[in-house]
Length: 236
Ligand code: UDP
Image (cartoon, rainbow, N blue to C red; front, side, top):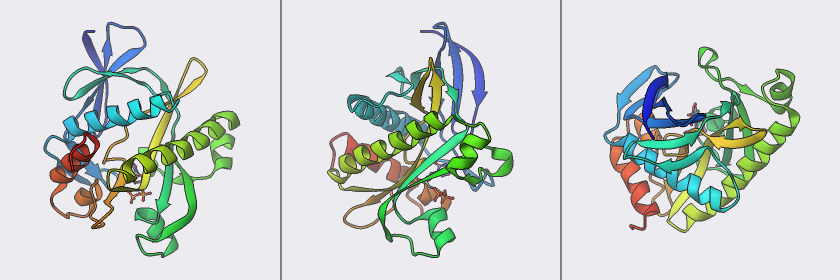
């Protein structure tokens, strides 16, 4: 397919029209931001790795019956996707306390949770993506009760599938964020699943292998993204 005009440029991705109606190209950039865009930088080859890693997870989830916007990889940095109407709710699932949950509860990072936690954030850059609850999601008309139920159940299923898959590769899935979109009455998983949107810890050493290395200036950022891909792709 042919790449047409750019429709949207975000912090980490660009979206282009194609000659196939209703289908788009997503291009993954090396740009990285954190803390509502206050911290900016670039991570070498992040775009290439996030494109591959997201495609890998979307394909894995599709095999488990979880549909997504992903159609196919078309180049190092580009994937072909179904156009969806993004539901403006970020759904976070957690297995272990980290990041904002550590701050909110005072529990140390690394504290295991008795059961997975699902949280919702209103996707509004101008408000700093505030946390909201199920009741807000429906009352504000962000999603219907049925869509909310489907997003919650799907996030929990994704958590189970990814957690088990990563565990076998020596990676602990601490938490992650997913987004969903509407297409023809369906709710499709969209956006990306990558070290930008997940927390991955090495099972043996506890080393962080995700965007926290950038957020917290830990160094070895590009190496961590590459290590995740290497483990997924069959390496040690
Ligand atoms: N996350 C994300 N985008 C956001 C906020 C969070 O992808 O805008 C991911 C983050 O990488 C982590 C999970 O969601 O895997 C939970 O993040 P948390 O609420 O702890 O936020 P943070 O520590 O990033 O403030």
